[in-house]
Amino acid sequence: MSGENKMATTEDRIVIRGLRDVAAAETRLSFVDPNGALYYLGYNIDDLVGRVIYAEIAYLLIHKKLPNKDELAEFKSNLISAMQLPDAIVESIKAAPKNCHPMDILRTEVSHLGEYDPEGYDLSRPANIRRATRLIAQVPAIVATIYRSRIDQTVPEPRKDFDLAKNFLYMFRGSPPDDNETAVIHQFMVLHADHGFNASTFAARVTASTNSDMYSAVTSAIGTLKGPLHGGASEKVMDMLDDINLEEEVEEYIQGMLDENKKIMGFGHRVYKTEDPRTKHLRGIVENLCHRERTLSLYNKCIKIEKIVYERKKIYPNVDFYAAVAMDALGVPKEYFTPFFASSRISGWVAHVIEQYEDAVLLRPSSKYVGEYGRPFIPIAQR
Ligand code: SDX
Image (cartoon, rainbow, N blue to C red; front, side, top):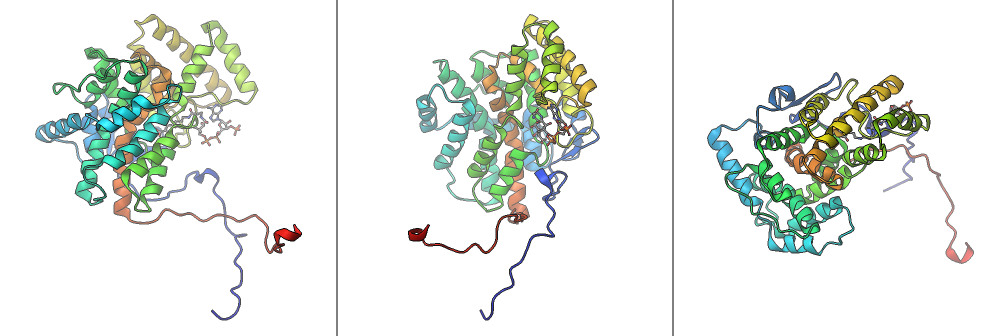
């Protein structure tokens, strides 16, 4: 090419830190309304929670419509079949180091699953719908297997008379959940299924935008969800609640954290300008579990924390705050809180991956270069 190209500068580029309020693509899957509402494909979650089972929402996300009875029956059957993991995955989970975090094993084994995909590298839409369905079942099955292996217990076979969510809790704990616990796990998973372009979903979309496979995209998402600023917050909420021994200590503990400008886990949100619409449902779930002494004590601490944080910072609890207490009430150890979040959000992640494949555009932003220019090269002999 003749002549020197004039070097461009990025001085005029405006950086939107954290991509705050930047619309990176269009989506039909969910709308996070800053005024405190959440919609899954046009349905307000307030109209869904307690009235659908989780499998209906997973079906809605990947098929764009709520299933009729026959469609749901076939979908549930496919999900239960897929909960039977390949032997190599089960053996790999058993061989994992006992001291690593369950999210690290989940990240590894979803990636590992890609090596055993019965449809190989067929990225056609029908194959991706089937792959998405399998992953929606395999992620909770992996979480249950990690825990059972960790406590040296076998994983019960999924029961055909149970749906995915009930089987998940059954396989995780080794005993059938009662009706109240079954209702809780369904509401929990319905509330966690999808949430716009949150960090882990966006990570999955960036990976899918290069036409990489679904396992790679979900592995990206799992690594992203693990962070305490995102899905990892719920475990930190329980750390905080366990650290506050008595209800009487809440005021001093929380005021002290705020005086030191520390973030209170389970509070605040990038999008909502008012209370996270999922919080009222999760707070209600916890209230219904307060016949349990520990849950009542945790709930009383939470109510006090909510009041203090609002008075000081005018911010609200997000999905992770009461979700932590709800999972604790189900007997889930806190290091499995984020894996439980992932066991539902997998349905959102795979739906967004399929939508990104359809959008067919590489997600590659620019940047504002603020480094040096024109540095003279000095060979190592003179450096
Ligand atoms: C999830 O994006 C999603 O949709 C995520 C999620 C989903 O369903 O996928 O909703 C799930 O990840 C929920 C968020 C879980 N994370 C936490 O609970 C961690 C604690 N929260 C914060 O780190 C924070 O609120 C974020 C990360 C959630 C949002 O951060 P932003 O939008 O970057 O806001 P910010 O950190 O700039 O805070 C704005 C102001 C600051 O005050 P000033 O310094 O301007 O005076 O609000 C304050 C912050 O100090 N603030 C908090 C706070 N969160 C914000 N102060 C104390 N405790 C907090 N938790």
